[in-house]
Length: 137
Image (cartoon, rainbow, N blue to C red; front, side, top):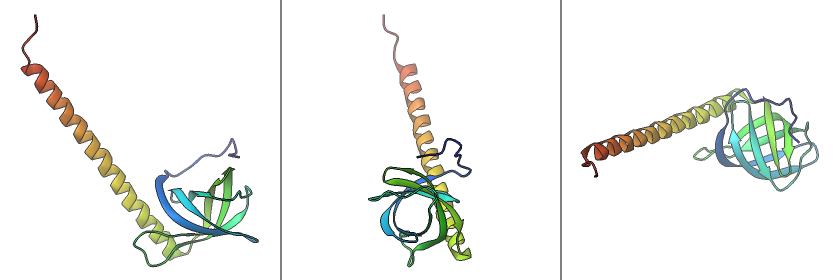
């Protein structure tokens, strides 16, 4: 259940990477569904308890080793999906996370710019076609 007072500080990017996670008495696998500087959401085949401390390893594409989240806390649970707030990352992992998010931000902004250019071009073509059309009687 998502606490009513829960608010995100950092934007999350919709990404899909395999993850391995574990707590004191369990280990599981899932798919990361979004990622931010301070947390992520995971879809898996089990239900976790809100407030549980867990370790998470994110398998980022084109990287030789998993991104280790040494300590995270489950902040919300909705069925087989849960949100993790990152509490402890090694320095190197924080740098890799920052780099991944920076690349995703650039990709997102480029996509938005390209979509806007497409809309502007469509509007210009529509205006030209309307101006060139003879009036109907």
